[in-house]
Amino acid sequence: MEQTILHIDMDAFYAAIEQLDNPSLKGKPVIVGGGMRGVVSTASYEARVFGIHSAMPIFEARRLCRHGVFLPVRMKRYRAVSKQIMAFLTTVSPVVEVLSIDEAYLDITGTARLLGDPIALARKIKGWILQETRLTCSIGIAPNKFLAKIASDWKKPDGLTIIREDEVDGFLRELPVAKLPGVGKRALKILEGLGITRTGQLRQLPEGILVKKFGKFGRRLADLSRGIDHSPVISESQPKSISSENTMDEDTDDPAILRRYILAQAENVGRRLRKHSLRGRTITLKLKYSNFRLITRSRTIEAPTNSTRVIADTAADLLENEIRVSKVRLIGVGISHFEKSIEQLTLFERSTRQDQRQTRLDSVLDKVTKRFGEDVLKRGG
Ligand code: TTP
Ligand code: MG
Image (cartoon, rainbow, N blue to C red; front, side, top):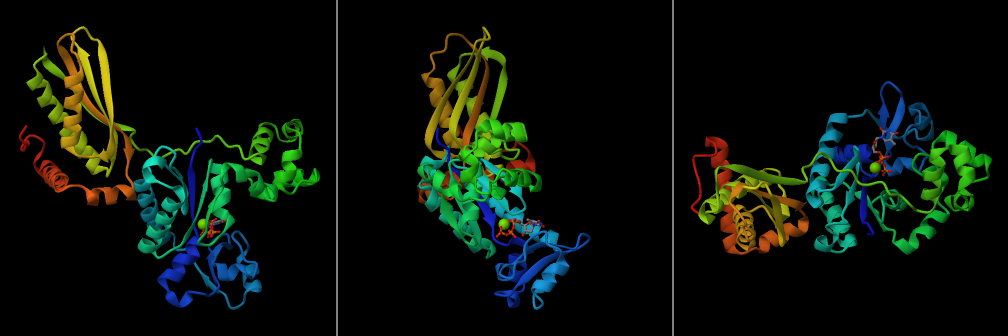
């Protein structure tokens, strides 16, 4: 299946924050860096005009731009802004890989249908980041991580670039090989020796030669030159599912007892979802019979939910549809297929009064549970 990956990268991150915190620096060449190593961390786009870039010795930057504003690194402040942005991104898609302080990958393949057009989504992300942080970013959209990163870098600052399957060759043809991930000074030298500076040229080279020169990395280079990258977006330690189950004191086939278990378990699952600001779409009922036969039944609902009531009702429905062959020994309720998006916020706003009442009830119960423990308050069945 074709994937849709977003790469989000903040523009001149440290320098932009300095300009934000001191508006008199806006429009000026700002160079952030120094410290022990005495190199430039980053420079504002106004400073880049003078040829200043990351990792350049500060003294050289001073020589290139005498009237530049040179500032020390304020890591704590940048980290706080970074956290705010990354936390937001995890609400857009559950599959977020934070790559560095100012960049992240989002896999929106699974959610594309729900989140709509990737370009519209990227615009929304840019809008949110600008509104909440007053900073701009650049976003790349592509069928894999490598191309998404190339795309975000294509038009900076404040860029939005999509690379479609049939545009891959065009983007890569003139791309300097130095831009390929993993190509450092050494690889660059070898490639130069072969007369190769552009990715298009690299592609012409037989893979055998690349493998001979670079070993395993040669195969990777051959892939990259064709726009192939199978590496997955690895999300942060986030649960893939949340569930709750109990073994009965005594095996039973009494529907009323089973439903009571379901309600308590849905309560538990719903509370944990809400605590993590998650909503799920697939609700699963698990049953283990007296004969130890284990079955699971799942249903995927249209709108992601964190509502105890919706989870309980769906699980109860699954129970009702299940022809039980013997008494039940264990019962459990789970939810997976997490999604939370800006789209869903509007969905939420549009939701009926009944839902809102239910949501309020859920949040009140969460608070009470937190303060007094689980057994104090139980809603009516
Ligand atoms: P980058 O995203 O590479 O650079 P940037 O955000 O400043 O500019 P661009 O618009 O081109 O994305 O890096 C993010 C931050 O990481 C950058 O603001 C400062 C820090 N950094 C260093 O400290 N040293 C370095 O060599 C690089 C490349 C970045
Ligand atoms: Mg950046």
